[in-house]
Image 1 (cartoon, rainbow, N blue to C red):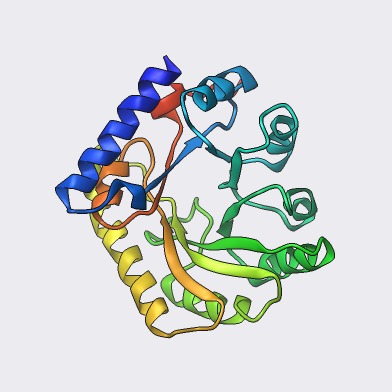
Image 2 (image 1 turned 135 degrees about the vertical axis):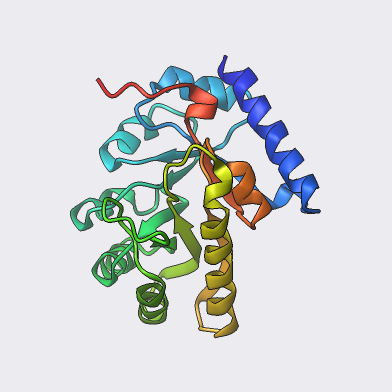
Length: 229
């Protein structure tokens, strides 16, 4: 089942790219494996997946040693500062940086471990009270400040768009995030590239790709419904 669904998502990514004249190689599929057992992740791995996303540090660490070491792990969930030390050197990208204090801690741990860490700044573009992330103005301020910290590199933005029945409802938010990334890139801030846009999930990743996503986070579409019990 996992192999077939992974193939279907990959096909849909390619089709979305073709609709807007993008090269499918510009889009990275992150298989969101949170709450899923190692066996299912291995099934996706055997089908060619190498990018996996986890929401919780402890869950990522439990899986890390049980799976092949050429997997690229993405931290996509809300990250507490006291958990950062476990991630450094083991994650290829932290998507969910939403405060200067968190950026400081990632920088401090990266310095301590003598490694570099790539991060994205999380934007709450729809201003939803139930979600983490920053406003447009706060995002620009954080990028400018965090860019000065050693051993971290700001690669772009991440957004969790509202849960909607019609993916088209999220198109304006994806457009806005793309515009924000272009605005920030135009400032030519040292240590900021804005080459990555992490946006789009199972319900709306095709629209996100049409609006410029370079990373899409798909869980249910590959692994089926999550089990939170």
